[in-house]
Image (cartoon, rainbow, N blue to C red; front, side, top):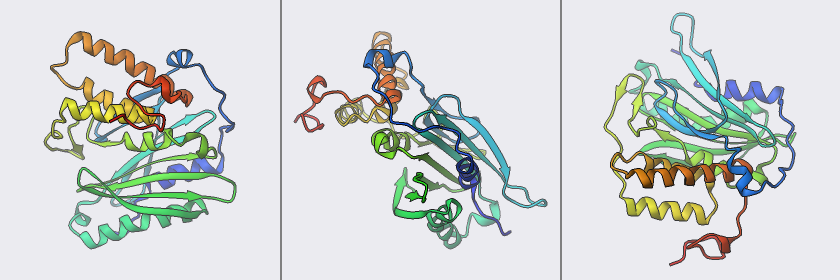
Amino acid sequence: MNYKLLIPLCLATSLVTGYPVAIAEPEPIAPMAAASQSVWSRFSPPEGGFSILMPGTPEETNQNVGTEEKPLISRGFSSIRENEGIYLVGYNDIPEEERSNQKKLKAMLDSIPQEFAKGFKGRLVNQKNITLNGYKGKEFKIQDSQGFVFRGRAYLTNNRLYLIGVLTTKERYLRRTIPGFLNSFQIGDSRGTTQVGNTTANPKPTISPETLNSQLQLAVCTQNWVGAITIVDRMLAVSTLEKEFRSQLLAYRQRLQGFASSGTVVPAEALPGCSPGGQKKP
């Protein structure tokens, strides 16, 4: 079977040709006011086998990238954030007869950055190998002549290819939001259970409260608001969490969402436990 795994490419390039968002420098929003304008929430579609923080309500786009005899439906989801860009996530299953060919799968994963660059008619700025929960992946950045930048990541599981990315002309204003969005992607549903295709694997190993607290402190000190929201979500998933602490976490999460949606930069001295350089205090 001859096919190409082009989920996000099909979705993203169609959006590039008629980019509907007027990108402008964001105006500063007061932190308290921003909390009531939160738009980020964890998104985990049925049978998607993943979760990620997305702004607003993602729109779904499906497309057959296989053949008439052997259809292969790719699923893509996009959220347009005014004054920022387009946030994308998508996947398609790898045909069963292709899953055991490790050489071909590796070649397919390695080719994704260049394929995207061709699709965007842009330049591949950089790429690197990455992993997530043991799954191999690629991280890359593409820029075209019109000033559009696409920063994406692709992950290859046992039977599925995932791709996430952000398309924007204002990368410099999203230096925390873009990494936070990409880092919020989890292979598994919102409960941490891996559901790829029709298979269910064991839940992710439990992370100690001390580790989560340390990760949260670091995310806050570096003002990675989307990453901090992801860690708070992991805390909220603990079944033995006391009711009072859960309420405090939910309120804190709302505040973080406000910061993330507005791109708020908080003075370092206003962040407890953080040094002026944006790191945790020893």
